[in-house]
Image (tube, rainbow over all chains, first blue to last red; front, side, top):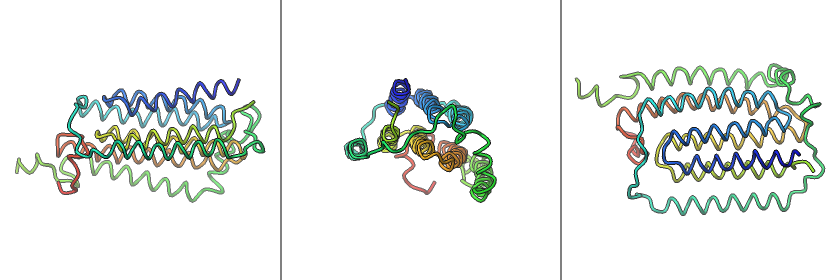
Length: 178
Length: 101
């Protein structure tokens, strides 16, 4: 049963991931990426991580992708047209690197003996519940938590500085106007 | 038979490979950005799989922190994308190959 679910959601993740790369319209890529996020959230539930699954849907599929789709709509991007590629070697290089990585995956599947570790049960384990995550986050890992809050503050200030007109980057429009 | 740890690692590696290929071959800066998000998610899957199989909550904590970094990256990255689009009227990364504006 779990194997079937793994195959279902794994195939969904890989298919949507391929669609992210294959689509020419960024909006379709964004929708496919949301499909990847949803199927990964389902895999997280199978891995006894319900809190992470919920955060995945709320933060990734909800907040981050809304931001991306909003920017796509705001900039009103047309579909990529076929153009002469300036760097012709990029696609072969990408395929070669992908082949190397896939060979590593095959090596993992063939050589790693993993019969001695068992997954946490999704129904009885307390590994992924909110309480254990919160306890660890505010005791043992308090320093990374605080550093993360500083990072978010920097992100807020940076985004405001970058996105406002006449900010850090001089805009061409302002130059022509002056 | 239950899904093994190596299955999750293999799935994660495949997703990471797809994302890396996309970053290399895509020209649209927003599409590259989404491929980077795909790579971050592949790593998150590895973290959660190890957390589950080793019965340790640490991996899930770092998934949380990776998500925060991804949110910060989205905010700053999209700000940079808007700034580039305002200056160059295009989202092609080849057009933005020099730092000078």
